[in-house]
Image 1: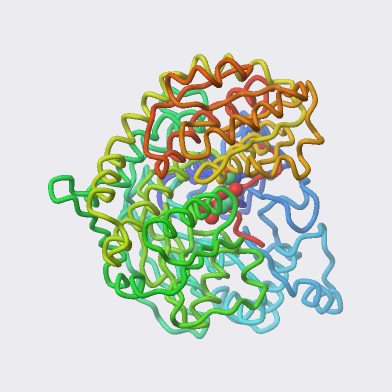
Image 2: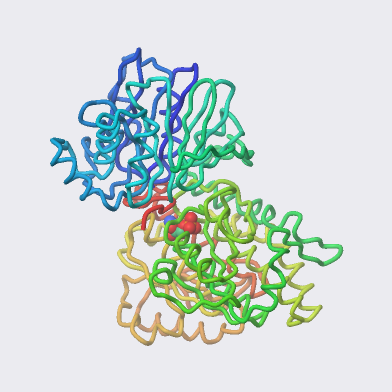
Length: 612
Ligand code: M6R
């Protein structure tokens, strides 16, 4: 969602901020803007559209100034247009704000400011906040820092903020509540951003602000305090990825790069955790809560989107190998349902970004109710990673494409390792089966590599369906969540309406949709459901539907029935999701490219959904 970049130092701020905004484009946005203090004066540029449109706006002009803030906006309050784009400048030009999040009580504040004579240019909550800070600054005769704190003490909602006060042109202010903000620490210079991607090429030293903290950055140093004015010592962490890892690396799109990275990302998730010689699984991040997991009556898995689909695979894994009762919940439903949670429960939250607002809120609620909360996150130092009692990092590396791919397979590997480790400790899995699965996990990177080698054929299959208007995805058992994931991938990047179903559910409704224009993607590998799924394929063909079947290498039976088959290597059915999802990711990718869709930044979508 929205992205913030800020800079203070000796270099020219504009190019650093522009590049930072480009780094944040993956989060999804519809307008962009930058404010810099240029020779003591505020210089503001903003527009609807892309960061490149902003660059065009100032083509040929030289913009100096070594302090500034920039923003990419994903519209919540007010349509995406030039006026509603950030930064917002207060009525008397003293306060300039970029903001991620939502100020929920902005209407009340707006009304009181109107009564005090303020007028507004746009419809955003952020403009109201800029005016509110200015009003306090001017009427209470306090410093900008104090005015910010007074205002934020009265604000209800979520914010990540970058703020400039034109009367104090050598200070850059930041604040955070519920929306991430990080400060990069350089030599006599500081960087501010919603995540580490705009910062990594300048420094690997990062300070994450906590909720209700305000940072004041000058060229001489950094001062953090909370909203009650209590000083906070900054905790400096190290950025764990390199600047290279956030480039396309020769691929046309980040999504394609990330799909192809899966052999490595899977190996990285397992690295140091599975020891082949001793057949052991060491999950250091959850070792302290292992007794709780082993004795848990119930695990509630909470997540959104693709992470929710990984959670569904987790349900099968935990039930089969650890014999623990599992429920999987959409975070947005779970958090508002007043669910029954006790201290005996373990809540497992899954999130690539670690910043998804609903998942974070669900985590907090579960903690308040006394549950042990464990996380599976990709982004190191993210809010969810920091607020859970314990957790596992997936170490899949930065995922920039909005459509989640390598994060999914790494989440499923992390869940598999957890299920096996717990099952072993609970004595619910036989040694031979455990060893078989350990070997299977270690072979996965190589098997995924083999699936990727079939990409040319997958592209040809995709060509046949580039004009489809609807699609159905069917799978059973471990492959049912993969069917859901395949459908989600197709709809989010190619805008084709797609639905995933357990294959046996087809007869309960979706079969009515089948005609000769309907592609049906069937996960039909040789597992215990094989014969039943073959029947489903026959039912589709009897109604002239188009069948694309994902089958086990060497399957000739389905090849005779289906319109197209895509082969994947034979592997244990519990590990199949990590293999079977790959052709579905590639199909969505190719169809989206053929339809000329913006693969990495699909319309209306944001990479991390930091508002509910
Ligand atoms: O960062 P998270 O894993 O918490 O994100 C959850 C969803 O927003 C995310 O998976 C979304 O559905 C993706 N666009 C799917 O590709």
